[in-house]
Amino acid sequence: MDAPDMDAPDKHIDQHRNMIEAARSAGVRKLVYTSVQGAAAGSAFSPIVQSNRQTEADVKASGLDWVIGRIGIYIDTYKARGEIANGAGDGLCAYTTRSELAYACAHMLTGSKHNGHTYLLHGAPITQAILARHLGDTFGMAPWYREMTVEAFRAERIAELVEFMGNVIAGIYQGIRDGAYDEHSDFDAAAGRPHPSWANDFGTLKNLPIDR
Image (cartoon, rainbow, N blue to C red; front, side, top):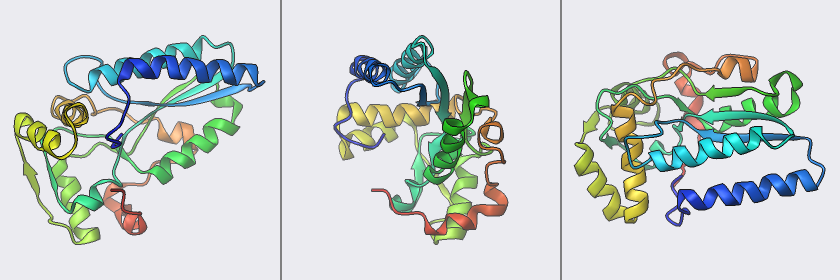
């Protein structure tokens, strides 16, 4: 999601269709697709959500066994920035980590009971202020949230990245502000155990790699 050369959303549809066809031709029997959460309208991130929803439909129509995981936002990436500053306001956000996602996807891949299901994969939704407090306690980061307007955050992201990616990232946090990431979690059904609690188990994240 952070790659500055990310393709436009409509290109991903054909790319994914080619991958589905290649999998079918190779005799693959099951597809596990990691999709995204978010609103399909109302922000600059919405075209990416729409693209993912189309791929979900293509996966379901593939004739193969399938399972879909709509992933929460990776919490790992905040460690590199050293502070929480964005346009999400008081919106609740569904977060996860790469290691938890890998754990859930392994179960989704190997368990036939998951076939035909779409899961929301994340922990309990939290605000940016709570996230900042946890990160401050765990990593020594600034333990407060610096709220920005959507417009100011978009301008900052565009200046640091490129216009396309800056708008996309700003759109994610606009979605958080608007409640698009305040979702129930299906993690326990997918993984066979609950997602770790941010309140009780945040210390387990101390060894997360820094994702720049």
